[in-house]
Structure formats: structure tokens, C-alpha cells
Image 1: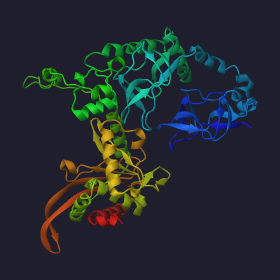
Image 2: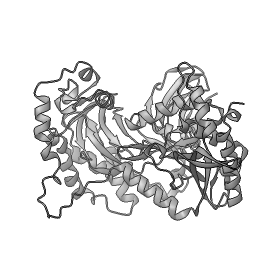
Image 3: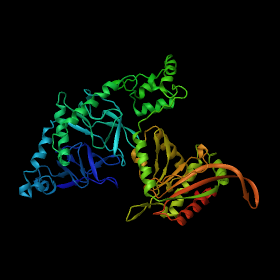
Image 4: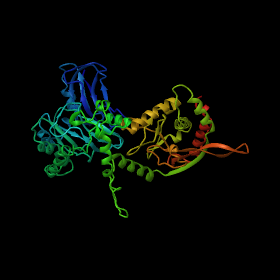
Amino acid sequence: MAEIIRMPRLSDTMEEGNVAKWLKQVGDSISEGDILAEIETDKATMEFESFYEGTLLHIGIPEGEGAPVDALLAIVGEKGEDISGLLNGEGGGESTPAAPEPKEEAPAPTQAPAAAVPEGVEIVKMPRLSDTMEEGTVAAWIKKVGDTVEEGDILAEIETDKATMEFESFYSGTLLHIGIGEGESAPVDAILAVIGPAGTDVQAVLSAGSAPAAEAAGQPAAAPAPKEEKEAAPAQAPAATTSSDRVFVSPLARRMAEDRGIDLSTVTGSGDNGRIIKRDIEHYQPSQQAQPAAAAAAPAASPMAAAPAGTEQVEEVKNSQMRKVIAKRLAESKFTAPHYYLTIEVDMGEAMASRSRINELPDTKVSFNDMVVKACAMALKKHPQVNTSWNGDTTRYNQHVHVGVAVAVEDGLVVPVLKFTDQMSLTQIGTAVKDLAGRARNKKIAPAEMEGSTFTVSNLGMFGIQEFTSIINQPNSAILSVGAIVEKPVVKNGNIVVGHTMTITLACDHRTVDGATGAQFLQTLRAYLEHPVTMLA
């Protein structure tokens, strides 16, 4: 008997999924556990396996298209089995229009634009590469109009609110049109590119692709026509901007160059369109002219330095996508969550001694920040009210502990997340933080690794900052600000002695965490830090 497979819910925030690639085709034999398709969710692209055996009789969502959770994804059954009844009962597209007879003619005009898209032509939309992404910026086009594109080729580097990521093509053909020029931003689902056979009438394709959206908004289908002329201009931008002032480089090659101190402008790329790739960095030989050329270019790179004395000068720099989203999220948090702050001083004498002994062990490196993260995770288990999220009519109590660690990067701030932090040892925390922070700074961290925090730690102690407050990282209910360890006189047993103290400040959302609750959490946290052996029990 045929089984209906629906679009699965692959994450807690997923409302719809996009079929990135079908690994089985209609007529293929399916075994339980076989991978049917790769499905792009709001967080990642994941393999989706079949729970049934049989023959793939029907595909309900083609590659590159999306549908809401529980939509008809596929039908698996016996070869030759009649599934017309399932399609009429489940498809929605056939049965819904058929029920009200007078409306049968209404869908006909809306189907016409779709039919105008020639076979083999695919409209590539701006992808949603993270759960908070609302728009993306094209950092660099790896392919240009007229290039041949194979499935899996990197089309462009797209800057999201969290990282710059390579975006690969799911289609093969010729890159016919670029809808978003380098350095330009556009909302998710905007037309990014068109791929298809060479010689295709791109304007007709764009008209067909934009007509349904116009009709949905109550506008005539012809309205987008003037916009097409505007969109055509950026399509030429990559060809015009692939000059010496633009360096095309893969993220891995960029990271390797940064680690080795290599100036990318002196590297000759061997990849597509002169793109610098891994092997170019591995085989790089510094040129004798590299340093003089860089020195000659230095004065021109800073227009502010060339300004005459006494002259006012202003330079406007376009905000990165990450910076804009950081500004938006922090403003929303500060203006919607009633913040209050609790500050205490922690005696770090025993913590310093314990850390020294731990780090004497072979292949072990534990930082004070690792100790703070571990102490927070354990304190959250004892004070679950702090490990919550405000949801309007309800408060969400997180039974798991996922601690986010704020990391400063070139464009702003990101928060990699240590999943199930309370179950990790100090050395595991140290290794994980180092790895995540390093990849975050090099823009190699995955969006899924920056999601799901239930509490956040922000540490500026390494910069000599003794005390500060932070804005809560929503949807968390609290964030801990960690200052520097300071040597100063302290009173112990009635005597003034030299001590080492650290100031920590807890910012709380008063909607979920009352003052007494926050204070009790800090007391527990201080107890762990002042007696680190209790964290090893």
C-alpha cells in the first residue's frame, strides 16, 4: 500500500523546507533508511531518509522549490500502483480548485506565467542561510554572466548576519543573469541569479518569475517590467568589478593567508576566474616587489591621513549585514526586555591556584573563562528560573544548558554556543571554545553552531576592563559580564592581605528573573569559582 511522505519538521523553528536535491527519482527502488533528498531548513541542509520500502511513485516538491511543513513531499508504494486517489486527496493543488465549480477558471491566469519559464531554466533565489537572516549581501561573485555552471560549483559568497558563506549551485547550465550585484543587499527569496541554456530570453524568464508575486500583491503582472531594466545593470557589475582592486578568494584560502601573514593582493589565483584557492596559498612564493608595492599603496589606502591640517573630513562606510543585524537585535532586546543589573566581587585566589595545577597536566590548557563558563552551567542547573525564555503568555523553561560565549570578530560580535555545557569537563569546554572562536573569527563557523543558547557569557577581562554591563542576548533571560582579575588589598580574617578579585555583573530580564533569583544565582556562581574543586565533583 502506498505511503505518503510529508515535508518533515527538521528543527524546532522550521515552518517550511526547501528541497535542495533529490537523491532518488520517480521509479527508483527505495529501502528503509535510504536518503531520499537533501532538505534545506531554516538552520541547515540535512539529509532526509525514508522510513518506508518500495518504489518512489511521485515527487510532490521539485528541486529548488519549498513547501510548508506537512506538505506532500513524495509517495512510496508498489511499482505500478494507482496513486491518483492519494494525489486528489492530498495534493491541495488539484482538489481545492475542483470543489468550488465557479472558481475553476480563476487559477488559469496564475498558471500562465509559470508556463512561460522555459524548460531547463532555473531562477535562483537569495537563500536563508541562518534562522535570523532576513536579507543577505553578495560579498563576491565567483561566476559571472556567460560562465558555465555545474551542479556543486560555488556561485557566490553571501554575507549573512552571522558569517560569510559560500553558496553553491544546485543546477547545471549557463549563468544567464545576476540579480544582485557585489556589495549589494536583498531580502531572502529575492532573485539572485538565473541559470539555464545559453541564448535563453532572460527578460521573459524574469517576467514569468515576478508575475505571480505582483499578482499576489494586487499589482498588474506587467508592473515589474521597468524593474527588469534596473536588475539587468547589476548583472554586468561582476564583469566590470573583477579588476585588480577585487580579490576573489575562497574562505579557506583567506584563513590560511591570514594565518601565514600573506598579502592576498600578491597571490595569483589558479581557480575559476583567477580565484585564489587552497593550493595557491600552499605553493605561495613571496615576490621581491610585494613589499615595495604594498608600501607604495599604503598612503592611498587612508584618505583621512591625507587631509590637510585643520580640515574637517568625514568618511562613510557601508554597514555590513552582520553589523546591521547586531544593531537591530540589541536594540530590540534593550527596548523590550526590562534589564536590571546585579554585581558581585569574587575572590579568585583558589581559582588561580587550581588553574595552575590543572595546566601542569600534559596536553591541558584551561583558561579562567573556561572556569566561568563551567561554573555558570552548573549554577543554571540549580537555578532553572535563570535558564528561561520569555514567550509572552508563557515562560519557556529550558531543561538543557547551552551556554553562548560572546566572541569579537572583525564586523562585530557573534555568539558560538556550547551545547549541553553542564555535561562538559573544563578541558572539553576549553577545547570547544578555542575551536569555535577561531572559526568564528575566520568566518568558517556554521550558523547552527551559533543557535540555541540558553545563557550567555561575555568576557572583557583580557582587555583590562574591570567592570561592565551587557545587553541580554535574546531569547535568553540573562547574560554574565566578566571583568579582569585585579590584585588589590583585601580583608581576610580581620587582616589586610594581598588578594585577587574579579567583578562579575549579571544582567537579567525582569519579566522572567526576579532580583532575589538573580542574587541567589550569583551566590552559587561565586561559590563554584571560589572553590573550584566543587566543579570537579
